[in-house]
Length: 56
Image (cartoon, rainbow, N blue to C red):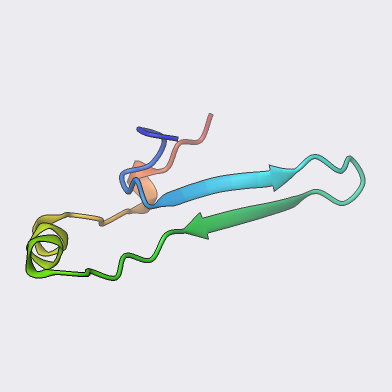
């Protein structure tokens, strides 16, 4: 899913049921294990806005 959203921790998935489709927003929660990971997370820009949305 890389590049589909501004945040590589988010994925959009759906059930292909034709009569009752369901759309899921799946988010990965990062819990840093050490100082290096904590620093990396602090530097990331995970902001998403309506203007960033792909509308097809």
